[in-house]
Length: 359
Image 1 (cartoon, rainbow, N blue to C red):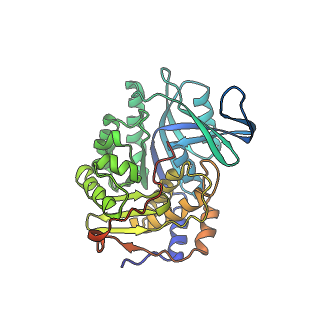
Image 2: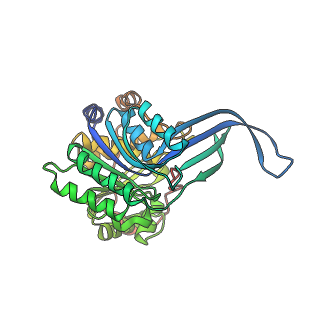
Image 3: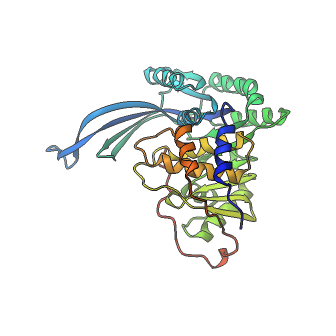
C-alpha cells in the first residue's frame, strides 16, 4: 500500500508553491451570477420566478484556474483570447484586480464567452451561454505563439485549460511542444482536456479528465472500478501521457502514476453546495504541488483537499492559501487504496456523479 503524504508534507508543499510562476494557456470566459430567491411560479409559463438580490462577475474557465492559482499563493500568467467587447474588457480588469498577469488576444470577430448562472436558494435554476467555438485568427494565434516562446522557459509548471472554445489548436500545441523541447529545465505540463481535442495532448506529463471525459476519449464507458481502469489504460495508449488523474466527482480521484500503478484517493468533501469550477480548483492545486517540486501523488492529495473546500461554496470559488493551509493542519490522514490488486473482481458501480460542471 502506498503511503499518503503527511499533513506536514502537504502544508510544506503549499508553502513552497508561493510565488512559483505557472502559465495557464486556454479558454477564458466571464462567469456571470444572478443570485436571488424563488417565491412563485410565473403565470406566463410553468417556470420559477427568481427575484434577483445580488449580481456578480468573475473570471471563469482558464481565468478561474489562474484566479485559483493566485489565491493559493502561486504567480499565474494567463494566455488566452477574448472578444473586442465590453465583456472582454471586464475580464481583463477582473484578472488585473485579482493579481493575474495576462496576455489576451483581442478578436474583433468573436464574442467573449459569457456563462450566466441564475441561482436561487443556493440551487442553480438555469444557465445561459453566449460563446463561439471558432478557431482564432492567424493574428491571434501568432500572439499566443510569440508569448509562449517568451514566457515558457521562466515557468515552474504549465497548465493547458481546454474548454474547446478555440484557443487550444494544433498550431498552438505544436508551438508549445517546440518551446518545451528547447527549455534547459522543462516545466511539468498539466492538461485539463476536452474529448474533441484528444489528439492534441500527446506527451503531457499529467492528463486530468473527469470520468465522463475519460469515457468519451477512450471509448471505455462505465462507472465501475474496472471500467475506470480500462479507460485509464486506453488513454495511456492513445495520449501517451506520463501520468493520468481521473476525477470521480463524489468519489474522489483515481491516480494512474503509470499503467501498472493505480491509486484511489477518496473525497474529503463534507458538504456539497456547488460543483461549479471544482475542476479548476483541482487543476490549480495540482499545478501548485508540481511547481513546488513534489511528486504527482502529493500534488493529487493536495488537490483533493482543495476540491473539498471548493464544492462547499456557492459559485466558482477561489480557495485561498490560508483556507487550505488551515484545513491541512487539522486534516485526517488520507487513506489510499491500490486498485489493481482487486480490479479483476470489481464490477460494482461506485461513482454517483462525475460530470464536468465547469463548462
